Amino acid sequence: MKINRDNTHKKNIINNICKEIGLPANYVVKIVDDLISICNTGIHLKKKIKIKNFGTFLLKKKKKRIGRNPKDKINHEISERNVVTFKAADVFKKKINLNASK
Image (cartoon, rainbow, N blue to C red; front, side, top):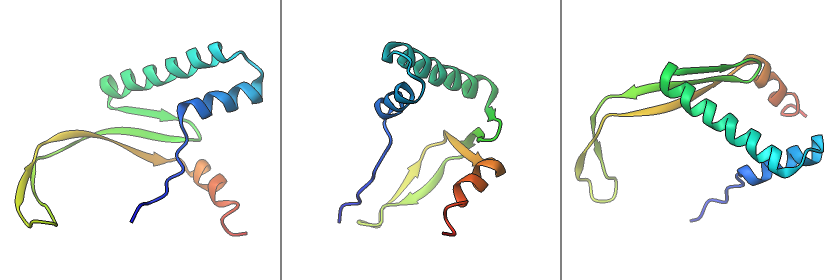
């Protein structure tokens, strides 16, 4: 069974910004790339990025643990790793849920 996912790609974001604002695509590409770079650096150095009225990205460290492959039931050690989590701001949640009740 294949799950159909409708993902938003960076190219789509750039095209939408170009249409909305009217800036040339090469400027928007630079802005989006710089924004992603700033977020990557910020999360790496500060472990937390808060964007007002949008949400907070947090870097969390997961400990190593034992996991089991459901197909063959064999236990494997899952190594410790860093994961990025996102907690949506209340303002963002309210905007998303405005149309949910209709």
